[in-house]
Length: 210
Image 1 (cartoon, rainbow, N blue to C red):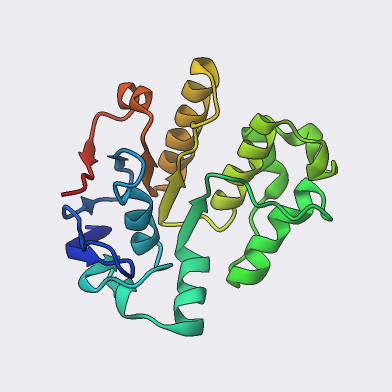
Image 2: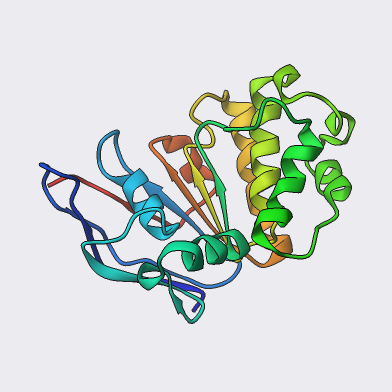
């Protein structure tokens, strides 16, 4: 079992406690986490990524209890083993596409990946030396995906990767994520309210407020 969670709960200050269903995934598995806006699905993603600590329960990736790590230990573990595709790309405007990706192995302390090959597989090889400010929304999303893959993670987490895309590009992005996850043997979790994604990832759980 690559990833497992047990009895996860989290409470934002002044709000009701969120209780999440358990997650169990092997390498190469894909899971969809569905939920309406405000249901807590992004909170669950942040718990899985170690960006939030649960008020109860645990997150275990491989043989490491992510929820028990702290500080630099947690940052290094996340950098080595977890790739995150945020809803907004958050690329560094002063850097080129290639330079944005080169930061990933630098900070994660992992062996540098073949960035040129990765960009080629994502259809972005011609943009390697382009400013990120010149990218279209779809291109920026692909660079964001490339950045999440640049450390060859065990777990890929994607937050609303299709929210601003039409049907054709939605399918392209989901297939791209699935193909790349399969290639590196990673588990893939997509958090979304977009019901269209269910056509591409049949395994899902639904997060609901109570």
